[in-house]
Image (cartoon, rainbow, N blue to C red; front, top):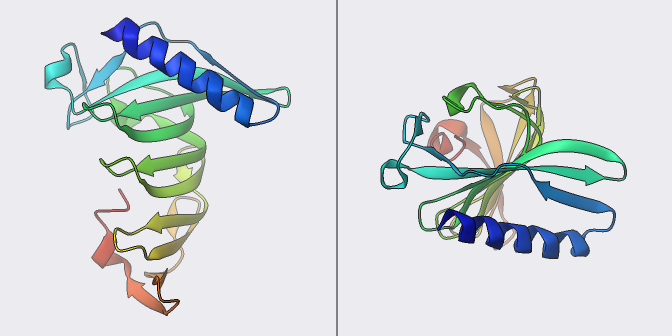
Length: 169
């Protein structure tokens, strides 16, 4: 099963590479890393809340480490770059660069830029009703206690962050 998943990822990454000019991705992990709900590594897939594959990506001569996390059913969970990866405890992993999170149904949940493990810039949150929220971050801290939400009908409003705190995790 692991070999099949790895082969599928290599094929997917290869196909994606052709769509992005100047990008080359190489899978660097032979094994799949399984994590439980507490972000601790587990040996058994049945005990895992998600699993991770590691790769290196080269874009215009610059190489960076990237990862892809998947829900147990194979849907993408999270992907992006990292500066440090703790194989035993994912809570210690330091994200770096562009990171995208996905809902269990495969649709994009949020995307944001990380600098040395801290969110920096604007996080864009895609809500299930089709609305889009934007949260401003500076060095890992929210700049305001609200986010701007644009609804499908074009209406915009400020919404307190506490209403969406769980989705921003």
